[in-house]
Image 1 (cartoon, rainbow, N blue to C red):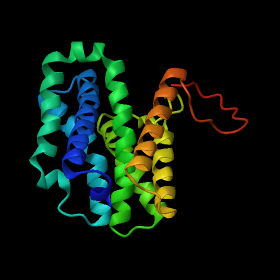
Image 2: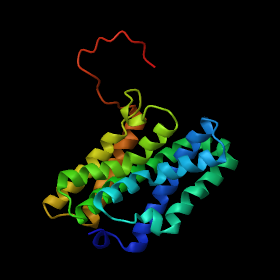
Image 3: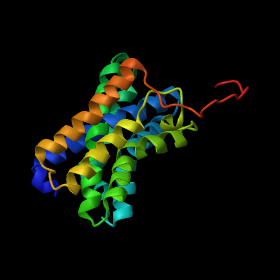
Image 4: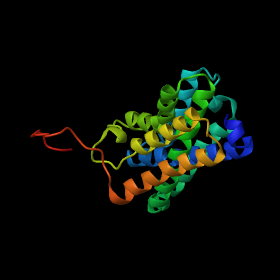
Length: 218
């Protein structure tokens, strides 16, 4: 189905762009944590490829694309080199990086859902793996950096919710047999715009109703 939506070259290029941007976010966190160059590279690789690796292992697409396409492995290393030498400059364009990160989020949730369905999963399971594809690398990044994953923190702008919406729209399009290049692009754009709005207006998910904890917020 993916080959029917996008040409292999276009899909591969979009994948590499998303991987590069995710890798930059991982490398920047490693610099903030004062990791050495190896640690920066590991965090960049994990952030960029973790979600896709998890998806491919679950659906049985082995060996995963990250191990059969050298570009998937090398791209995070290029991001590592960039951040290692130019991280002050990269930090200054963090807003731009966040925009591309939002675009990668939208792309990966749609591609992950579609690929999971291609391998025989049901619509709900496919949407869940679409979400995992989009946010899995970020979760692994935060765990390795000894931080609470961003998507679990109430004080962070919505991240998983836009991916859920994008994956759900993709699943619905599959269900009603209207998934094509146009509708899949619409799902990508919807997740992308929701993430941008969440960053712009600091939208956050609600916490427990009538929460009365006296614990000091971190």
